[in-house]
Amino acid sequence: MRQFAGMARFVFNRGLALQKARYEAGDKKLGYADLCKELTGWRNSDETPWLKGGPIHPLQQSLKDLERAYANFFAQRADFPRFKKKGQRDSFRYPDPKQIKLDQGNRRLYLPKLGWLRFRKSREVLGTVKNVTVSQSGGRWFVSIQTEREIEVPAPSGGSVGIDMGVARFATLSDGSHLPPLNSVKKHQAALRKAQQAMSRKTKFSNNWKKAKTRVQKIQARIANVRRDFLHKASATISKRHALVVLEDLQVGNMSRSAKGNVEQPGRNVRAKSGLNRTILDQGWFEFRRQLDYKLAWRGAHLVMVPPQNTSRTCPECGHVAAENRRSQARFACVECGFEDNADHVGAINVLRAGYARLACEVSGAVRPPAAGTRRSDSAAAVGCD
Image 1 (tube, rainbow, N blue to C red):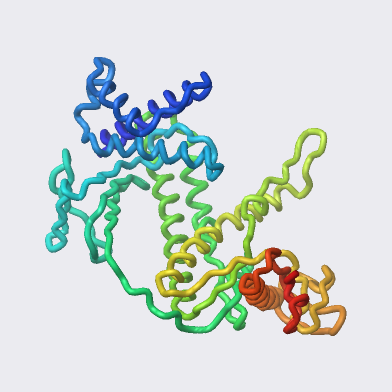
Image 2: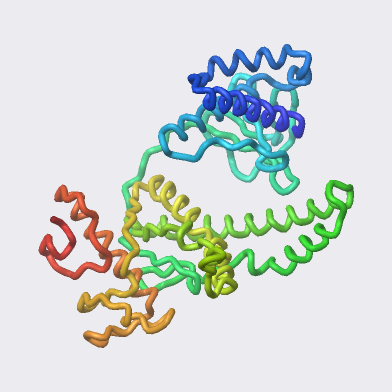
């Protein structure tokens, strides 16, 4: 499996190098069919005869992934494709279901050039098998089986809720409940630092260095698994109870940007900002949003994104907006009417109202999205519709 993953990586990188050379020379990029012709030449070449030892379809799928990455780049949906590195996301995919045999009773899977493989079944495989992806993570091999089946989308059930994402509280709901943060990295930080220090003292690429690297990878895999498990449980619970969920459209990349600055303008409070950045990235806000999106769609529910500006500075009682309203990280006290509450709860209430306003604008045909924390009013001006 390591050999096949290496072959798929080699084919992707060689195809990318060829496309880059043509792009820099001003030539037209090669399509998928032309790349497959090049692959045939590589397999028959005296330089790379070992490519014949691998299955052809996974190698072709690497070129299809390259073609998709190029299409995303020219459509401005992604950056320019990058070369793959050994040991990072090693995988290969079998696209032909006729060559795949699945024996769920005995927990076996037949793949070309690999034969029958036993696997630990985490869930029942439902539907018709379409393709199989074999990947390595944290020193272990995983198989992902994609299937196709028809399901009936249920009618949405439950009420509406707004969610304010944070660090002190992972998620605060507009109904007053909240989810405490997991902080997976913080819990394993001491063990990870110790393993990384031990790895740094080893001679690079020696056997002891490889063993130390494996220990680091296992800790990192555990951190990711714990975070993923927490996010799945949280998103599943919320999606089952609500028909409409409103979230802030947070720009995590901007929020976690380094504060170092440069030589002419050095940053301030760099160490504190670095710790905050680590905590923000540890929450997994974007992954939580992604999981909520498809789980709500499974249940016929909806996810609405609203701008995050002033959600925690707007009074839900009188609508007054001021930075002074938020006295501290947790305390909200309106300077206009004296209303007091938890700041995150106030933010969740305003997020939900902004979601209602956004839906009202979409129904009425307005283009401009509403501002967060809109006043409770039936007029179009109050919800931000022009």
